[in-house]
Length: 271
Length: 132
Picture (cartoon, rainbow over the protein chains, first blue to last red):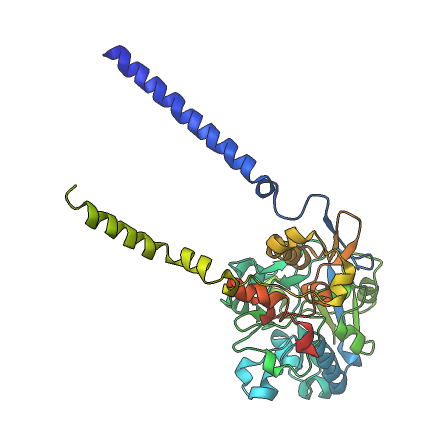
């Protein structure tokens, strides 16, 4: 009796081992491509464009002394037409559904904690401070995103959106202290005046914001607003002491929005 | 086996009914049967002869390839796709795929409708007829 139970357990153990190993071998041999990952073959690979502009941390300096309302208007126009940003207010008249990547605002709205009792005429009455996503070095929106749809690009510090992954929870909008993000409450396509075929549109239910013109940097160009700013904006690598932005910062005093929050914005203002 | 006749008759009727689609098609012409989709290639696509991978792969795996393109372009910023023979392509649905296959209705939609899949690419990405 003792002997036969022992033999039974032994046989059962070997059988389980055999079946397990066998099915594993079959599984591996049946799907060699699945085991090796997707894609036609390992020989194909991805590359950067040769004209791609690289930096450790892209940054922007906005000299508001050189700006007026018409230039601000032009900058917004250039950005929004290139990125297929819908004109929701113009089309549907609903201010709450407005979508914007860059827009001019008054000094007291851009820098609430810096409001002075007596401001210059220009700063106190005119919307001449262009505000956009600050591409923070420590972005709170990235921490808030549950799907990693918003991420900070390791290579150059741009805070980007992967619209494919955005589930529209709007945690990032709550997390962003600068209101730089807009939500597509409705299908944006009918509100796009002229679609730019080189850039995708968005769909209903995703959040969008400025991407520092990542697609233009990839072809060696400056961001659209910088080109339209008539010299008021400077774009460059904040981590490179020889860059244009750092040279300008060595001469001029520049401030950032809401520095006390510790997000370390990469957009600086000379006021 | 007293009910031998009844049982055999019943079996014959059962098989006739069960196999109806097969014998019906055999007798009354399979030519009327629904055909598989037949996507149309544009002149530009025919001229190019090869896509970014061979036809069989593109037919079965183009969705995985597009997913790979989208992740690499959006998240890693690498926009050039190099294939085995050294040819380089911009990894872009709207600007590369739709450049040759500019006939979305006769190319993409034909198979997608047949297979009853509704990819949401076109909610955001543009195709040639749309932007004209």
